[in-house]
Image (tube, one colour):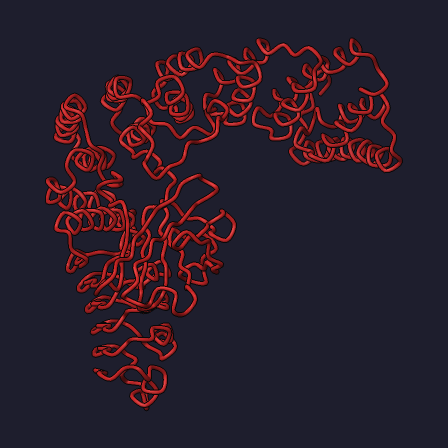
Length: 584
Protein backbone atom coordinates (compact mmCIF):
# COMPACT_ATOMS: atom_id res chain seq x y z
CA UNK A 1 0.00 0.00 0.00
CA UNK A 2 2.97 2.29 0.57
CA UNK A 3 3.88 4.66 -2.27
CA UNK A 4 0.42 4.54 -3.83
CA UNK A 5 -1.57 7.80 -4.27
CA UNK A 6 -4.78 7.76 -2.29
CA UNK A 7 -7.66 8.68 -4.60
CA UNK A 8 -10.28 10.80 -2.82
CA UNK A 9 -13.86 9.78 -3.11
CA UNK A 10 -16.37 12.07 -4.80
CA UNK A 11 -18.01 12.79 -1.45
CA UNK A 12 -14.68 13.90 0.01
CA UNK A 13 -14.02 16.19 -2.93
CA UNK A 14 -17.43 17.80 -2.67
CA UNK A 15 -17.01 18.35 1.07
CA UNK A 16 -13.64 20.06 0.57
CA UNK A 17 -15.09 22.27 -2.16
CA UNK A 18 -17.97 23.20 0.11
CA UNK A 19 -15.62 24.20 2.90
CA UNK A 20 -13.50 26.22 0.47
CA UNK A 21 -16.61 28.06 -0.77
CA UNK A 22 -17.74 28.77 2.78
CA UNK A 23 -14.31 30.17 3.62
CA UNK A 24 -14.35 32.48 0.58
CA UNK A 25 -17.92 33.53 1.31
CA UNK A 26 -17.06 34.51 4.88
CA UNK A 27 -14.18 36.66 3.64
CA UNK A 28 -16.43 38.21 0.96
CA UNK A 29 -19.27 38.95 3.37
CA UNK A 30 -16.89 40.43 5.93
CA UNK A 31 -15.38 42.73 3.30
CA UNK A 32 -18.84 43.70 2.03
CA UNK A 33 -20.05 44.53 5.55
CA UNK A 34 -16.90 46.58 6.15
CA UNK A 35 -17.67 48.54 2.96
CA UNK A 36 -21.25 49.18 4.00
CA UNK A 37 -20.12 50.34 7.45
CA UNK A 38 -17.58 52.74 5.99
CA UNK A 39 -20.12 54.15 3.55
CA UNK A 40 -22.68 54.59 6.33
CA UNK A 41 -20.11 56.52 8.35
CA UNK A 42 -19.17 58.65 5.31
CA UNK A 43 -15.58 57.38 5.18
CA UNK A 44 -13.97 57.85 1.75
CA UNK A 45 -10.36 56.79 2.20
CA UNK A 46 -7.78 54.65 0.38
CA UNK A 47 -8.69 51.61 2.47
CA UNK A 48 -12.32 51.81 1.29
CA UNK A 49 -11.04 52.08 -2.29
CA UNK A 50 -8.92 48.97 -1.78
CA UNK A 51 -11.75 46.92 -0.25
CA UNK A 52 -14.19 47.79 -3.04
CA UNK A 53 -11.51 46.83 -5.56
CA UNK A 54 -11.08 43.40 -3.98
CA UNK A 55 -14.82 42.77 -3.99
CA UNK A 56 -15.44 44.06 -7.52
CA UNK A 57 -12.53 42.04 -8.90
CA UNK A 58 -14.46 38.87 -8.11
CA UNK A 59 -17.96 40.27 -8.69
CA UNK A 60 -17.96 43.25 -11.09
CA UNK A 61 -21.78 43.40 -11.21
CA UNK A 62 -22.25 44.80 -7.67
CA UNK A 63 -23.85 48.17 -8.52
CA UNK A 64 -23.86 49.49 -4.94
CA UNK A 65 -20.10 49.06 -4.67
CA UNK A 66 -19.53 50.95 -7.95
CA UNK A 67 -21.65 53.78 -6.56
CA UNK A 68 -19.59 53.85 -3.34
CA UNK A 69 -16.38 53.75 -5.38
CA UNK A 70 -17.50 56.80 -7.37
CA UNK A 71 -18.23 58.65 -4.11
CA UNK A 72 -14.69 57.87 -2.92
CA UNK A 73 -13.12 59.02 -6.19
CA UNK A 74 -15.10 62.26 -6.19
CA UNK A 75 -13.91 62.92 -2.64
CA UNK A 76 -10.29 62.26 -3.66
CA UNK A 77 -10.67 64.80 -6.46
CA UNK A 78 -11.21 67.48 -3.82
CA UNK A 79 -8.11 66.64 -1.77
CA UNK A 80 -5.55 65.72 -4.46
CA UNK A 81 -3.88 67.81 -7.15
CA UNK A 82 -4.53 67.29 -10.86
CA UNK A 83 -1.52 65.04 -11.50
CA UNK A 84 -2.46 62.76 -8.61
CA UNK A 85 -6.07 62.60 -9.82
CA UNK A 86 -4.80 61.70 -13.29
CA UNK A 87 -2.79 58.79 -11.83
CA UNK A 88 -5.75 57.63 -9.70
CA UNK A 89 -8.08 57.53 -12.69
CA UNK A 90 -5.48 55.86 -14.92
CA UNK A 91 -5.13 53.13 -12.29
CA UNK A 92 -8.92 52.91 -12.21
CA UNK A 93 -9.00 52.27 -15.97
CA UNK A 94 -6.43 49.48 -15.58
CA UNK A 95 -8.51 47.96 -12.79
CA UNK A 96 -11.61 48.14 -14.99
CA UNK A 97 -9.84 46.20 -17.74
CA UNK A 98 -9.29 43.35 -15.28
CA UNK A 99 -13.00 43.49 -14.39
CA UNK A 100 -13.95 43.28 -18.06
CA UNK A 101 -11.82 40.16 -18.38
CA UNK A 102 -13.99 38.58 -15.67
CA UNK A 103 -17.21 39.66 -17.43
CA UNK A 104 -16.86 41.42 -20.82
CA UNK A 105 -20.56 42.34 -20.72
CA UNK A 106 -20.72 43.75 -17.22
CA UNK A 107 -23.15 46.67 -17.11
CA UNK A 108 -21.46 48.13 -14.04
CA UNK A 109 -17.93 47.94 -15.42
CA UNK A 110 -18.75 49.64 -18.74
CA UNK A 111 -20.86 52.31 -17.07
CA UNK A 112 -18.08 53.05 -14.57
CA UNK A 113 -15.50 53.21 -17.35
CA UNK A 114 -17.59 55.80 -19.17
CA UNK A 115 -17.88 57.81 -15.95
CA UNK A 116 -14.12 57.64 -15.30
CA UNK A 117 -13.22 58.60 -18.88
CA UNK A 118 -15.28 61.77 -18.69
CA UNK A 119 -13.61 62.82 -15.43
CA UNK A 120 -10.00 62.23 -16.43
CA UNK A 121 -8.12 65.55 -16.52
CA UNK A 122 -6.24 64.39 -19.65
CA UNK A 123 -8.15 61.51 -21.27
CA UNK A 124 -6.42 59.26 -23.79
CA UNK A 125 -9.25 58.64 -26.25
CA UNK A 126 -7.00 56.78 -28.69
CA UNK A 127 -6.34 54.21 -25.97
CA UNK A 128 -10.05 53.85 -25.30
CA UNK A 129 -10.78 53.41 -28.99
CA UNK A 130 -8.10 50.72 -29.11
CA UNK A 131 -9.74 48.95 -26.17
CA UNK A 132 -13.04 48.95 -28.07
CA UNK A 133 -11.31 47.49 -31.12
CA UNK A 134 -9.85 44.66 -29.03
CA UNK A 135 -13.13 43.88 -27.29
CA UNK A 136 -15.11 43.89 -30.52
CA UNK A 137 -12.54 41.63 -32.17
CA UNK A 138 -13.36 39.09 -29.44
CA UNK A 139 -17.12 39.61 -29.60
CA UNK A 140 -18.44 41.86 -32.35
CA UNK A 141 -21.95 41.84 -30.83
CA UNK A 142 -20.97 43.18 -27.39
CA UNK A 143 -23.53 46.00 -27.27
CA UNK A 144 -22.00 47.42 -24.05
CA UNK A 145 -18.77 47.99 -25.96
CA UNK A 146 -20.64 49.46 -28.93
CA UNK A 147 -22.38 51.95 -26.63
CA UNK A 148 -19.06 52.87 -25.04
CA UNK A 149 -17.45 53.26 -28.46
CA UNK A 150 -20.16 55.72 -29.54
CA UNK A 151 -19.46 57.76 -26.42
CA UNK A 152 -15.71 57.74 -27.11
CA UNK A 153 -16.27 58.74 -30.75
CA UNK A 154 -18.49 61.61 -29.69
CA UNK A 155 -16.13 62.88 -27.00
CA UNK A 156 -12.99 62.60 -29.12
CA UNK A 157 -14.43 63.87 -32.39
CA UNK A 158 -13.49 60.85 -34.49
CA UNK A 159 -14.39 61.61 -38.15
CA UNK A 160 -17.53 59.89 -39.41
CA UNK A 161 -15.75 58.49 -42.48
CA UNK A 162 -13.22 56.80 -40.18
CA UNK A 163 -16.02 55.06 -38.28
CA UNK A 164 -17.73 54.07 -41.52
CA UNK A 165 -14.47 52.47 -42.64
CA UNK A 166 -14.43 50.62 -39.31
CA UNK A 167 -17.85 49.10 -40.07
CA UNK A 168 -16.54 48.15 -43.53
CA UNK A 169 -13.78 46.11 -41.90
CA UNK A 170 -16.09 44.36 -39.46
CA UNK A 171 -18.73 43.57 -42.06
CA UNK A 172 -16.02 42.39 -44.45
CA UNK A 173 -14.79 39.89 -41.86
CA UNK A 174 -18.27 38.81 -40.76
CA UNK A 175 -21.46 39.55 -42.67
CA UNK A 176 -23.53 38.31 -39.73
CA UNK A 177 -22.93 41.35 -37.58
CA UNK A 178 -26.13 43.15 -36.54
CA UNK A 179 -24.26 45.79 -34.58
CA UNK A 180 -22.01 46.83 -37.48
CA UNK A 181 -24.92 47.08 -39.90
CA UNK A 182 -26.90 49.12 -37.39
CA UNK A 183 -23.97 51.44 -36.65
CA UNK A 184 -23.55 51.90 -40.38
CA UNK A 185 -27.19 53.00 -40.66
CA UNK A 186 -26.54 55.80 -38.16
CA UNK A 187 -23.37 57.00 -39.89
CA UNK A 188 -24.44 57.05 -43.54
CA UNK A 189 -27.01 59.88 -43.17
CA UNK A 190 -24.30 62.02 -41.57
CA UNK A 191 -21.66 61.38 -44.19
CA UNK A 192 -23.93 61.15 -47.24
CA UNK A 193 -27.10 63.12 -46.43
CA UNK A 194 -29.81 63.63 -49.00
CA UNK A 195 -30.06 67.17 -50.27
CA UNK A 196 -32.58 69.09 -48.13
CA UNK A 197 -35.96 69.67 -49.72
CA UNK A 198 -37.41 73.20 -49.94
CA UNK A 199 -39.52 74.31 -47.01
CA UNK A 200 -43.25 73.77 -47.11
CA UNK A 201 -45.14 77.00 -47.84
CA UNK A 202 -46.81 76.62 -44.45
CA UNK A 203 -43.53 76.18 -42.61
CA UNK A 204 -41.84 79.07 -40.91
CA UNK A 205 -38.01 79.29 -40.94
CA UNK A 206 -36.33 77.19 -38.28
CA UNK A 207 -33.89 78.55 -35.78
CA UNK A 208 -30.27 77.53 -36.21
CA UNK A 209 -29.57 74.19 -34.61
CA UNK A 210 -26.52 72.13 -33.76
CA UNK A 211 -25.17 69.56 -36.26
CA UNK A 212 -26.92 66.19 -36.12
CA UNK A 213 -25.42 63.29 -34.21
CA UNK A 214 -25.78 59.59 -35.04
CA UNK A 215 -28.27 59.27 -32.19
CA UNK A 216 -30.59 62.09 -33.27
CA UNK A 217 -30.41 62.23 -37.07
CA UNK A 218 -33.56 62.06 -39.15
CA UNK A 219 -31.96 62.37 -42.58
CA UNK A 220 -32.17 60.16 -45.61
CA UNK A 221 -29.09 58.91 -47.43
CA UNK A 222 -28.27 60.48 -50.78
CA UNK A 223 -29.23 58.39 -53.77
CA UNK A 224 -25.69 57.84 -55.07
CA UNK A 225 -24.57 56.24 -51.80
CA UNK A 226 -27.85 54.37 -51.43
CA UNK A 227 -27.23 52.60 -54.72
CA UNK A 228 -23.76 51.54 -53.52
CA UNK A 229 -25.27 50.17 -50.31
CA UNK A 230 -27.66 48.01 -52.30
CA UNK A 231 -24.68 46.34 -53.95
CA UNK A 232 -22.86 45.82 -50.64
CA UNK A 233 -25.82 44.24 -48.89
CA UNK A 234 -26.68 42.11 -51.93
CA UNK A 235 -23.22 40.54 -51.71
CA UNK A 236 -23.96 39.71 -48.08
CA UNK A 237 -27.29 37.97 -48.53
CA UNK A 238 -26.19 36.12 -51.65
CA UNK A 239 -23.26 34.79 -49.62
CA UNK A 240 -25.55 33.51 -46.87
CA UNK A 241 -29.25 33.83 -47.75
CA UNK A 242 -30.36 32.57 -44.33
CA UNK A 243 -28.45 35.14 -42.29
CA UNK A 244 -30.86 37.76 -40.94
CA UNK A 245 -28.56 40.74 -40.33
CA UNK A 246 -28.05 41.75 -43.96
CA UNK A 247 -31.76 41.36 -44.72
CA UNK A 248 -32.64 43.66 -41.83
CA UNK A 249 -30.20 46.29 -43.12
CA UNK A 250 -31.65 45.93 -46.61
CA UNK A 251 -35.09 46.53 -45.16
CA UNK A 252 -33.77 49.74 -43.58
CA UNK A 253 -32.43 50.86 -46.96
CA UNK A 254 -35.86 50.34 -48.50
CA UNK A 255 -37.62 52.03 -45.59
CA UNK A 256 -39.45 55.33 -45.71
CA UNK A 257 -37.98 58.49 -44.30
CA UNK A 258 -39.37 59.96 -41.11
CA UNK A 259 -42.31 62.19 -41.85
CA UNK A 260 -41.83 65.92 -41.64
CA UNK A 261 -43.46 67.28 -38.51
CA UNK A 262 -46.40 69.27 -39.77
CA UNK A 263 -50.15 69.87 -39.62
CA UNK A 264 -51.38 67.58 -42.38
CA UNK A 265 -55.08 68.53 -42.29
CA UNK A 266 -57.49 71.09 -40.82
CA UNK A 267 -61.22 70.32 -41.00
CA UNK A 268 -64.01 72.75 -40.04
CA UNK A 269 -67.71 71.89 -39.63
CA UNK A 270 -70.42 74.56 -39.43
CA UNK A 271 -73.06 72.11 -38.16
CA UNK A 272 -71.06 70.90 -35.17
CA UNK A 273 -69.06 74.17 -34.92
CA UNK A 274 -66.05 71.96 -34.51
CA UNK A 275 -62.46 72.03 -35.73
CA UNK A 276 -60.42 68.87 -36.23
CA UNK A 277 -56.66 68.98 -36.76
CA UNK A 278 -54.52 66.08 -38.00
CA UNK A 279 -50.77 66.00 -37.39
CA UNK A 280 -48.06 64.01 -39.14
CA UNK A 281 -47.31 62.21 -35.88
CA UNK A 282 -49.04 61.70 -32.50
CA UNK A 283 -48.76 64.79 -30.30
CA UNK A 284 -50.19 66.13 -27.07
CA UNK A 285 -52.01 69.23 -28.28
CA UNK A 286 -52.35 70.49 -24.72
CA UNK A 287 -48.59 70.84 -24.37
CA UNK A 288 -47.21 71.58 -27.86
CA UNK A 289 -48.55 75.10 -28.21
CA UNK A 290 -51.56 74.84 -30.51
CA UNK A 291 -53.20 78.19 -31.33
CA UNK A 292 -56.47 78.66 -33.22
CA UNK A 293 -57.00 82.01 -34.95
CA UNK A 294 -60.44 82.78 -36.43
CA UNK A 295 -60.80 85.86 -38.65
CA UNK A 296 -57.62 87.29 -37.17
CA UNK A 297 -58.69 86.76 -33.55
CA UNK A 298 -57.05 84.14 -31.29
CA UNK A 299 -59.69 81.80 -29.84
CA UNK A 300 -59.82 80.37 -26.35
CA UNK A 301 -60.66 76.74 -27.05
CA UNK A 302 -60.10 73.45 -25.26
CA UNK A 303 -58.33 70.85 -27.38
CA UNK A 304 -59.12 67.20 -26.71
CA UNK A 305 -58.09 63.92 -28.29
CA UNK A 306 -60.69 61.90 -30.18
CA UNK A 307 -60.70 59.20 -27.49
CA UNK A 308 -60.09 59.37 -23.72
CA UNK A 309 -57.49 56.60 -24.04
CA UNK A 310 -55.10 58.94 -25.88
CA UNK A 311 -52.82 61.52 -24.32
CA UNK A 312 -50.92 61.60 -27.60
CA UNK A 313 -52.86 61.39 -30.84
CA UNK A 314 -52.46 62.41 -34.51
CA UNK A 315 -55.98 63.93 -34.45
CA UNK A 316 -57.27 66.58 -32.03
CA UNK A 317 -60.60 68.39 -31.94
CA UNK A 318 -62.09 71.48 -30.33
CA UNK A 319 -65.55 73.04 -30.16
CA UNK A 320 -66.10 76.71 -30.98
CA UNK A 321 -68.53 78.83 -28.94
CA UNK A 322 -72.16 78.44 -30.19
CA UNK A 323 -73.00 80.77 -33.08
CA UNK A 324 -69.37 81.44 -34.00
CA UNK A 325 -69.45 79.94 -37.52
CA UNK A 326 -72.96 78.49 -37.90
CA UNK A 327 -74.33 81.35 -40.05
CA UNK A 328 -73.87 80.26 -43.71
CA UNK A 329 -74.05 83.88 -44.88
CA UNK A 330 -70.71 84.65 -43.24
CA UNK A 331 -67.30 83.72 -44.59
CA UNK A 332 -64.54 82.77 -42.16
CA UNK A 333 -60.78 82.36 -42.35
CA UNK A 334 -59.20 80.02 -39.86
CA UNK A 335 -55.54 79.34 -39.07
CA UNK A 336 -54.09 76.69 -36.78
CA UNK A 337 -50.57 77.45 -35.51
CA UNK A 338 -48.30 74.73 -34.16
CA UNK A 339 -46.00 77.09 -32.32
CA UNK A 340 -43.61 74.42 -31.08
CA UNK A 341 -42.70 73.47 -34.66
CA UNK A 342 -43.10 76.95 -36.22
CA UNK A 343 -45.69 75.74 -38.70
CA UNK A 344 -49.32 76.55 -39.46
CA UNK A 345 -52.18 75.69 -41.80
CA UNK A 346 -55.00 77.91 -43.12
CA UNK A 347 -58.56 76.93 -43.92
CA UNK A 348 -61.37 79.07 -45.41
CA UNK A 349 -65.09 78.51 -44.79
CA UNK A 350 -67.08 80.11 -47.61
CA UNK A 351 -70.65 81.42 -47.71
CA UNK A 352 -73.65 79.62 -49.21
CA UNK A 353 -74.27 75.90 -48.79
CA UNK A 354 -70.76 75.12 -47.55
CA UNK A 355 -71.33 73.33 -44.26
CA UNK A 356 -67.76 72.11 -44.02
CA UNK A 357 -64.32 72.87 -45.34
CA UNK A 358 -60.83 71.44 -45.11
CA UNK A 359 -57.25 71.98 -46.14
CA UNK A 360 -54.93 69.00 -46.30
CA UNK A 361 -51.95 67.26 -47.83
CA UNK A 362 -52.97 63.89 -49.21
CA UNK A 363 -51.03 60.70 -48.56
CA UNK A 364 -49.86 60.97 -52.16
CA UNK A 365 -48.57 64.52 -51.64
CA UNK A 366 -46.74 63.48 -48.49
CA UNK A 367 -45.30 60.39 -50.19
CA UNK A 368 -46.40 58.34 -47.19
CA UNK A 369 -46.75 55.03 -48.94
CA UNK A 370 -44.62 55.51 -52.03
CA UNK A 371 -41.73 57.87 -52.79
CA UNK A 372 -41.19 59.37 -56.21
CA UNK A 373 -38.20 57.54 -57.69
CA UNK A 374 -35.58 58.84 -60.08
CA UNK A 375 -34.96 56.95 -63.33
CA UNK A 376 -31.63 55.70 -61.97
CA UNK A 377 -33.05 54.49 -58.68
CA UNK A 378 -35.99 52.82 -60.43
CA UNK A 379 -33.54 51.01 -62.69
CA UNK A 380 -31.44 49.84 -59.73
CA UNK A 381 -34.46 48.68 -57.72
CA UNK A 382 -35.76 46.78 -60.75
CA UNK A 383 -32.36 45.11 -61.00
CA UNK A 384 -32.48 44.33 -57.26
CA UNK A 385 -35.94 42.82 -57.66
CA UNK A 386 -34.70 40.68 -60.53
CA UNK A 387 -31.74 39.48 -58.41
CA UNK A 388 -34.02 38.63 -55.48
CA UNK A 389 -36.35 36.75 -57.79
CA UNK A 390 -33.37 34.73 -59.02
CA UNK A 391 -32.33 34.01 -55.43
CA UNK A 392 -35.88 33.01 -54.59
CA UNK A 393 -35.80 30.45 -57.40
CA UNK A 394 -32.69 28.96 -55.79
CA UNK A 395 -34.05 29.33 -52.23
CA UNK A 396 -37.85 29.02 -52.63
CA UNK A 397 -38.43 28.64 -48.87
CA UNK A 398 -36.29 31.61 -47.79
CA UNK A 399 -38.66 33.93 -45.90
CA UNK A 400 -36.20 36.86 -45.89
CA UNK A 401 -35.97 36.79 -49.65
CA UNK A 402 -39.77 36.64 -50.04
CA UNK A 403 -40.29 39.53 -47.64
CA UNK A 404 -37.64 41.63 -49.41
CA UNK A 405 -39.28 40.98 -52.76
CA UNK A 406 -42.52 42.35 -51.29
CA UNK A 407 -40.74 45.46 -50.01
CA UNK A 408 -39.07 46.05 -53.37
CA UNK A 409 -42.43 45.79 -55.08
CA UNK A 410 -43.86 48.27 -52.59
CA UNK A 411 -41.03 50.70 -53.33
CA UNK A 412 -41.42 50.38 -57.10
CA UNK A 413 -45.18 50.24 -57.67
CA UNK A 414 -47.46 49.21 -54.77
CA UNK A 415 -50.62 49.19 -56.86
CA UNK A 416 -49.10 47.59 -59.94
CA UNK A 417 -47.63 44.71 -57.90
CA UNK A 418 -50.65 44.21 -55.62
CA UNK A 419 -51.58 40.77 -57.01
CA UNK A 420 -48.00 39.46 -56.78
CA UNK A 421 -47.65 40.89 -53.27
CA UNK A 422 -50.73 39.00 -52.05
CA UNK A 423 -49.41 35.76 -53.56
CA UNK A 424 -46.02 36.19 -51.85
CA UNK A 425 -47.70 36.85 -48.50
CA UNK A 426 -49.61 33.59 -48.87
CA UNK A 427 -46.34 31.76 -49.52
CA UNK A 428 -44.75 33.45 -46.50
CA UNK A 429 -47.54 32.23 -44.22
CA UNK A 430 -46.93 28.67 -45.44
CA UNK A 431 -43.13 28.86 -45.22
CA UNK A 432 -43.08 30.60 -41.80
CA UNK A 433 -46.35 29.49 -40.24
CA UNK A 434 -45.31 30.53 -36.70
CA UNK A 435 -45.44 34.17 -37.85
CA UNK A 436 -48.50 33.92 -40.04
CA UNK A 437 -50.40 36.41 -37.85
CA UNK A 438 -47.60 38.95 -38.32
CA UNK A 439 -47.68 38.49 -42.08
CA UNK A 440 -51.47 38.84 -42.06
CA UNK A 441 -51.21 42.14 -40.19
CA UNK A 442 -48.43 43.41 -42.49
CA UNK A 443 -50.43 42.42 -45.55
CA UNK A 444 -53.47 44.22 -44.09
CA UNK A 445 -51.34 47.34 -43.59
CA UNK A 446 -50.19 47.29 -47.21
CA UNK A 447 -53.72 46.68 -48.52
CA UNK A 448 -55.02 49.63 -46.49
CA UNK A 449 -52.25 51.82 -47.92
CA UNK A 450 -53.21 50.75 -51.43
CA UNK A 451 -56.87 51.46 -50.76
CA UNK A 452 -56.06 54.94 -49.47
CA UNK A 453 -54.06 55.65 -52.62
CA UNK A 454 -56.91 54.41 -54.83
CA UNK A 455 -59.41 56.52 -52.88
CA UNK A 456 -57.30 59.64 -53.31
CA UNK A 457 -56.67 59.05 -56.99
CA UNK A 458 -60.46 58.74 -57.44
CA UNK A 459 -60.98 61.89 -55.30
CA UNK A 460 -63.79 60.33 -53.26
CA UNK A 461 -64.51 60.13 -49.54
CA UNK A 462 -65.55 56.47 -49.59
CA UNK A 463 -63.10 53.90 -48.22
CA UNK A 464 -63.93 50.33 -49.26
CA UNK A 465 -61.73 47.37 -48.36
CA UNK A 466 -64.25 44.52 -48.13
CA UNK A 467 -63.33 40.85 -48.59
CA UNK A 468 -59.54 41.39 -48.36
CA UNK A 469 -58.81 39.21 -45.29
CA UNK A 470 -57.91 42.33 -43.31
CA UNK A 471 -56.92 41.47 -39.73
CA UNK A 472 -56.02 44.90 -38.36
CA UNK A 473 -56.74 48.58 -39.02
CA UNK A 474 -54.02 51.21 -39.39
CA UNK A 475 -53.43 54.67 -40.91
CA UNK A 476 -56.82 55.73 -39.54
CA UNK A 477 -55.58 59.32 -39.18
CA UNK A 478 -55.55 59.40 -43.01
CA UNK A 479 -59.31 58.72 -43.01
CA UNK A 480 -60.37 61.85 -41.12
CA UNK A 481 -62.49 63.07 -44.06
CA UNK A 482 -64.04 59.71 -45.01
CA UNK A 483 -67.86 59.67 -44.89
CA UNK A 484 -68.50 56.01 -45.79
CA UNK A 485 -66.33 53.03 -44.85
CA UNK A 486 -66.87 49.41 -45.88
CA UNK A 487 -64.93 46.82 -43.86
CA UNK A 488 -67.27 43.88 -44.52
CA UNK A 489 -66.16 40.26 -44.96
CA UNK A 490 -62.75 40.52 -43.33
CA UNK A 491 -61.16 39.05 -40.18
CA UNK A 492 -61.43 42.03 -37.84
CA UNK A 493 -61.94 41.35 -34.15
CA UNK A 494 -62.30 44.92 -32.94
CA UNK A 495 -62.69 48.53 -33.95
CA UNK A 496 -59.82 50.07 -31.96
CA UNK A 497 -59.82 53.47 -30.20
CA UNK A 498 -58.02 54.97 -33.23
CA UNK A 499 -61.26 54.46 -35.19
CA UNK A 500 -62.59 57.57 -33.43
CA UNK A 501 -60.37 59.62 -35.77
CA UNK A 502 -63.02 59.20 -38.49
CA UNK A 503 -64.77 62.39 -37.44
CA UNK A 504 -66.71 62.77 -40.74
CA UNK A 505 -67.98 59.19 -40.86
CA UNK A 506 -71.70 58.80 -41.68
CA UNK A 507 -71.98 55.12 -42.68
CA UNK A 508 -70.08 52.17 -41.19
CA UNK A 509 -70.34 48.78 -42.87
CA UNK A 510 -68.58 45.95 -41.02
CA UNK A 511 -70.73 42.88 -41.69
CA UNK A 512 -69.27 39.36 -41.64
CA UNK A 513 -66.24 39.88 -39.40
CA UNK A 514 -65.45 38.61 -35.90
CA UNK A 515 -65.87 41.95 -34.14
CA UNK A 516 -66.33 41.73 -30.38
CA UNK A 517 -65.31 45.25 -29.40
CA UNK A 518 -66.62 48.64 -30.63
CA UNK A 519 -64.40 50.83 -28.45
CA UNK A 520 -63.41 53.06 -31.36
CA UNK A 521 -66.98 53.98 -32.38
CA UNK A 522 -66.82 56.84 -29.93
CA UNK A 523 -68.29 60.35 -30.26
CA UNK A 524 -68.53 60.22 -34.04
CA UNK A 525 -70.71 63.30 -34.52
CA UNK A 526 -72.01 62.49 -38.02
CA UNK A 527 -72.47 58.71 -37.79
CA UNK A 528 -75.99 57.66 -38.89
CA UNK A 529 -75.74 54.02 -39.98
CA UNK A 530 -73.90 51.05 -38.48
CA UNK A 531 -74.05 47.62 -40.12
CA UNK A 532 -72.64 44.85 -37.92
CA UNK A 533 -74.42 41.75 -39.21
CA UNK A 534 -72.76 38.37 -38.42
CA UNK A 535 -70.16 39.43 -35.88
CA UNK A 536 -69.43 38.31 -32.29
CA UNK A 537 -70.95 41.08 -30.18
CA UNK A 538 -72.24 39.24 -27.14
CA UNK A 539 -73.29 41.76 -24.48
CA UNK A 540 -75.12 45.05 -24.24
CA UNK A 541 -71.97 46.57 -22.73
CA UNK A 542 -70.17 45.91 -26.02
CA UNK A 543 -72.60 48.33 -27.69
CA UNK A 544 -72.18 51.07 -25.09
CA UNK A 545 -69.81 53.20 -27.27
CA UNK A 546 -72.62 53.66 -29.82
CA UNK A 547 -74.54 55.70 -27.24
CA UNK A 548 -71.98 58.49 -27.70
CA UNK A 549 -72.92 58.96 -31.38
CA UNK A 550 -75.80 61.51 -31.33
CA UNK A 551 -77.06 61.05 -34.93
CA UNK A 552 -77.17 57.24 -35.05
CA UNK A 553 -80.46 56.16 -36.69
CA UNK A 554 -79.90 52.72 -38.22
CA UNK A 555 -78.31 49.69 -36.56
CA UNK A 556 -78.09 46.15 -37.94
CA UNK A 557 -77.09 43.50 -35.39
CA UNK A 558 -78.46 40.38 -37.07
CA UNK A 559 -76.37 37.26 -36.49
CA UNK A 560 -74.70 38.49 -33.28
CA UNK A 561 -74.95 36.56 -29.97
CA UNK A 562 -76.28 39.69 -28.25
CA UNK A 563 -79.56 39.35 -30.18
CA UNK A 564 -80.37 36.24 -28.09
CA UNK A 565 -80.34 38.27 -24.87
CA UNK A 566 -83.68 38.56 -23.09
CA UNK A 567 -85.46 41.92 -23.57
CA UNK A 568 -82.68 43.02 -25.95
CA UNK A 569 -84.95 45.24 -28.04
CA UNK A 570 -86.26 47.26 -25.12
CA UNK A 571 -82.78 47.51 -23.61
CA UNK A 572 -81.36 48.79 -26.89
CA UNK A 573 -84.18 51.29 -27.20
CA UNK A 574 -83.23 52.64 -23.80
CA UNK A 575 -79.49 52.62 -24.58
CA UNK A 576 -79.80 54.10 -28.09
CA UNK A 577 -82.93 56.31 -28.14
CA UNK A 578 -81.92 57.98 -31.44
CA UNK A 579 -82.05 54.69 -33.39
CA UNK A 580 -85.30 54.38 -35.42
CA UNK A 581 -84.32 51.42 -37.63
CA UNK A 582 -83.10 48.49 -35.51
CA UNK A 583 -82.54 45.10 -37.14
CA UNK A 584 -82.13 42.11 -34.86
